[in-house]
Image (cartoon, rainbow, N blue to C red; front, side, top):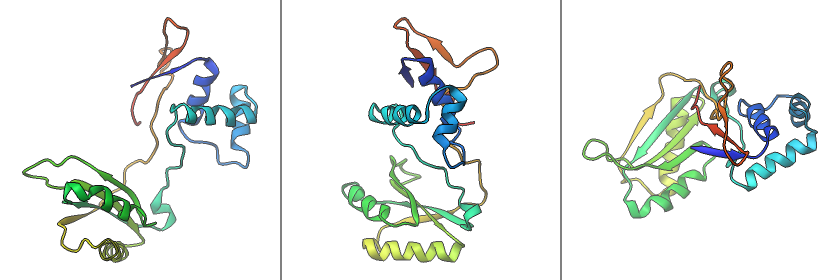
Length: 186
């Protein structure tokens, strides 16, 4: 995947925010100070990135364990294809559901096509939440599996560019813009 940005300042801003924003009272001012932009310019440029689809989502990565949520389960469902949209919306309205998405089935071994992640303080709370979701959405007869996590992995957002020593992830293209090579999660 390639994104095209027109200025070095755009690229510096992407590099500055991809690992997260500083946990200070004025994070955009601090970012601006680091890269030579005003606080307002940083805010406006991020808004522009969102408007043009360069940044599709701007959010936080929550470390649930540190907030007291010690259990989570990916619940996978074998939902009739014509009901995926309806049931995904129903499941996604619950605060304890942090992800809800459709995937292609891998028949015959994996019939599941709708996935949702449920978090709770412990397994009993997760199962209570699951029961509430099943009753509210009316999906008592739909086959599912509850897959509790056994270990945590590093949580972070995507990395879009990284200066790799003298070899930059940025390269010039003929129109004067820059290409950013997606290097994946670190």
